[in-house]
Length: 305
Image (cartoon, rainbow, N blue to C red; front, side, top):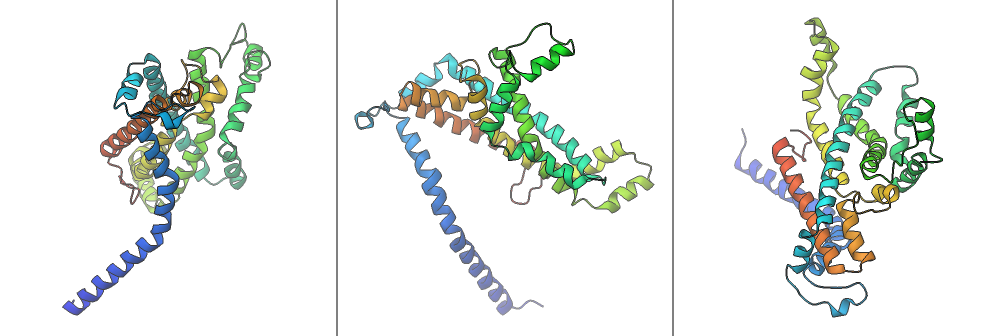
């Protein structure tokens, strides 16, 4: 029987644990506020001014004028379409391929540990380095990809993979999928290793094959970790910049939203317009994340949907 004194003691203990949690979290929260919160606040503040990078002291408050300049620019909407399309395509491919790799690595076979380590190599390479490596592989004259396709007879002449906008988009997707798929595979492999084996044994006794077991058991049980991993990748993909910049050079037909903001800030030195573009990017990421969490019923606290 739970007495009032016991309930009071439990309540005091819960409050002490909550206070201890806030004490331990406080340095992290202060660090986040200084490193991320203050720059974000400054960016939002500049977006309401006509600030130029050459003379910040002469900035004047112009209200929503910078936002209107961005929204009336066709290049901005091209960047929005490029970013959203890139995020959806790359995250979908990475989720499918990551699940396939995780299922293979989950099985027992000789050299499994070595294969697991090898799969992580693309993820460990810095993005700029891997993008530059792929830029040479996509080179229209010296690239190995054109050489292989010509040797196989799949091409009659070399292609300018990173110069033609339609080809450049898929080249960037290919590089991102190559680099980020190991991240998805690693998270899904961790989820697969927690699944109970007795469920699969019961399914086998009932005559369920591997394909039926995957769709009826594996996929529902790993749906939560899969949705959370896809969310992390979606956030990365929406704020992509470096792989586009290295591969395509920041052309207006292939640049993402982050590249558009950088161009206005540093090439045109219009800090107010660039800050407005960066603020719109943050708002778009927040909106899409909220829609994803609601429609996917993703719970970030326990990683379950």
